[in-house]
Structure formats: C-alpha cells, structure tokens
Amino acid sequence: MELADEQGLDLVEISPNAKPPVCKIMDYKKFLYEQKKREKVLKAKATKVVIKEIRFGPQTDDHDYEFKKKNAEKFLKDGAKLKAFVFFKGRSIIFKEQGQILLLRLAQDLEDVGKVEQLPKLEGKRMTMFIAPKKVK
Image 1: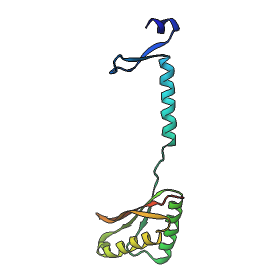
Image 2 (image 1 turned 120 degrees about the vertical axis):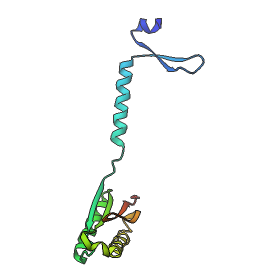
Image 3 (image 1 turned 90 degrees about the vertical axis):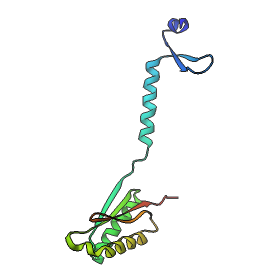
Image 4 (image 1 turned 90 degrees about the horizontal axis):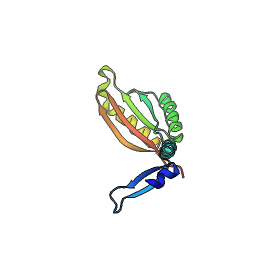
C-alpha cells in the first residue's frame, strides 16, 4: 500500500482467493476506462441478426409469388434471416394445405441461398416458416 501511495496509484486486488492474494499497482480509473472501451469494441463486432418478413395469402398468384421470391432471395444474400408466413383471413383457414404447399415450395426454390430453420407451423391464423442464409464460402 505504501508503494502505491508513493507512486500516486491504486492498489487493486486481482485474485483475492489465491494464497497469498494477488495485487497490482495501477491507475484504477484508467483501467475501468480501457475495460469499457474493450467491451464497446466487442459489442460493435457482434453480429446483429436482421429478420425480414414476407407475407403470402393462401391463394397467392404465380406472378406475386415470383416477385416475393426474388425479394426473399435478395434478403438472404444480404445475410438477413427470412420469416415467410401465410396469413389466413376469415374462412380462408380451410386452405391450410395450400398455405403449407406454398411455403414448402418457397423453401425448395430458395434451397441454394438459404436453409430452412423451422418448417411451416400454424399459429392461430398464421402459418410461419423461418429460413436462415447459408454461409458464404
């Protein structure tokens, strides 16, 4: 403690459980500042997952399907996850099979740019499917 006082620095206990306890003489405020700086850099490097949504109806026409498929392909190439869903309005819930066929067709068409993360699953009036982008080599 006397050495730390002479140098005008702080005595910081690094490992209190060790025998004898490990201490270090340093400027504690500077240490905290650098630690925050390192955490900020690590946080900036962390990948942020973007989820893009594409909505279909149970009886989506071929032209609309192709247009939405092209957008989905672009999203996956950009590295975003894709949430494709079929929304059933009113009595259209009777077309569940058509919705599932539509989503499976989309998954098959996007096979080269993405892989299915979750198969079509009916939740209330929505049938949802997740597609993740394939890793670029």
